[in-house]
Image 1 (tube, rainbow, N blue to C red):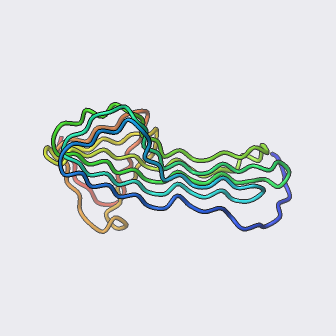
Image 2 (cartoon, one colour):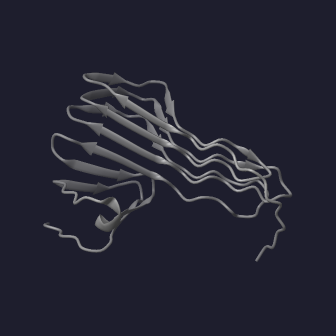
Image 3 (cartoon, rainbow, N blue to C red):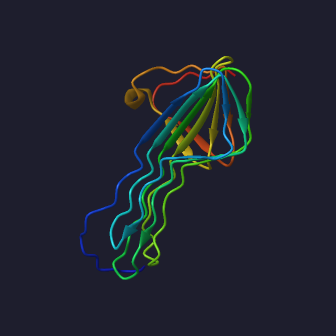
Length: 171
């Protein structure tokens, strides 16, 4: 393996939180971002959270909650972990853009980075949930604090759904 010596330095800011509630039509052709800050010779900020609730949507924009990148070479910078995106719609989802909650990277080859965050899309009318972003999403009722029931669960983009603890599946 690779061994490195690191000096402790303050990390960078996390991405914060964005909550957007649209009562009718969301048209997103730009960017909604809650990314963590890049760090120089320290730990980068983790991605924040983006929570969007709308009736209908359209557009091909970008929604991100990515971790910041660690830069600086010799001091083993650490990439921040990805954040969380929750995208809820109750009508027609015509949004064809990109949603990512990816971890940041390090540029020193120390291979120290956060993990991917979560991207959840929920059709609140049909109670369907879509798990995306090549992630592992763990449903653990002891940590989540509530029992969640969905009509359909779609696991997409090479994602994994882990059901932890007590659960019931009616297929």
